[in-house]
Image (cartoon, rainbow, N blue to C red; front, side, top):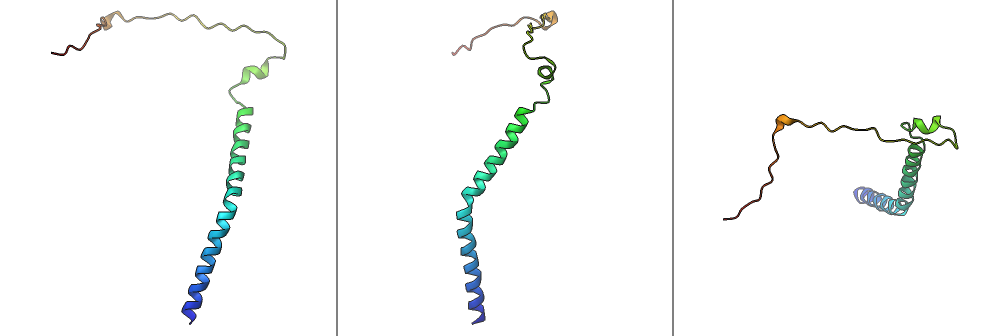
Length: 88
């Protein structure tokens, strides 16, 4: 009789926990997504690489031009030959 009583208690606890987890799962997911969104917004708002924007005053006009890049060719590499596959 004690074995059946213990087994019944174990099954009752198992099904009760299963039911409670099903009920609370949407709230847990909502909480986790809210926290992840807050972390993303915090890291997006405080960009450590954006030091230039912090130094400039509001209303200042700056014109940035890309640096002139010179293309270096390697003459020792040879020529590029375009080819086609020929089916026989």
